[in-house]
Length: 380
Ligand code: GDP
Image 1: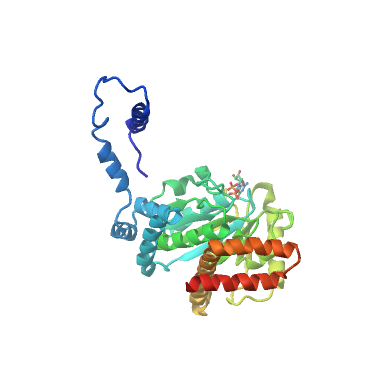
Image 2 (image 1 turned 135 degrees about the horizontal axis):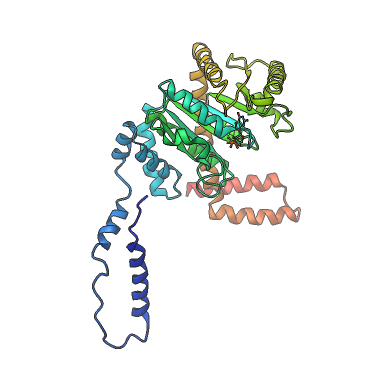
């Protein structure tokens, strides 16, 4: 983003005043002549503004060299609503694709307050000490304003915020989970091309976003609190089932005992689920993100997971399946857009709604007719 010098807004104001004067009928007297341009640097500044977008090559070579500023700017293009930005973003992603894939993608979920940010700070620090580079991304479809509600508070990630080996990006703003998730997935590609070999994708443990995160990570970690059942923590059964590892956080001070009991209960519960296709037996562990205890065990479990699933071929197979899933998602998204934004279809749906209300047509017949109409508009 270009930061304009303070006088720039003054220029805008003066242009506005000037325009007002020219339009005004009272401007009849020949007064002091207006200068050609209020600020000789204005063209230069505007020129710089236009040049804000660099050639694709610059982004790609910057990203491949690990330049975080260019990486950030490229992600901003991915998140943009402007078609011309998205077009450039697609070219950057395509060029970065061959350099991605060399990473472990870890999804982390848990209800607000469970300690996700604190955990990511401790975990990230530990992983960086293992000579790795960490990118922290988030999926939070509830955040309509850029910045997101999760990861917005970086005070709990002070080490990672300062570290050169970490890259933190809050959730893309947007109302639709599908769009936010797609952008995050594309962001993962760029981060990997920039050399981040450990990708953490955070989401809050309520709603649909877990499924979206699950569809883009290799390993799914669920953080829970000691001493409360998962129903009490607002965690749905399906989410527990998705987990490759459950970590009972805040196992410190007087909660250590409670955390150990919770861990044993979860370990038992996990064994009741049918075996997973990936050949991995989900585990339960305890940790304290605050006092950085148990982080090493969690990292060891992740390495072990990667070893097991790489050896049995699931790791690669799963990533391919995820890519196919994302292709299908993109097709559905594109088709939906094409269909519902078609003016003839819009009109036909309105009419069909009325017909269904009057019970003069069945919904199935109406759908069939509208689909036929859509196909005809495509042949034109
Ligand atoms: P998030 O909403 O899941 O990201 O949770 P935060 O990381 O913001 O943590 C919520 C609160 O729990 C903060 O006050 C943290 O200091 C505290 N917290 C996080 N992890 C631990 C832990 O391991 N032990 C203790 N005692 N407190 C923790």
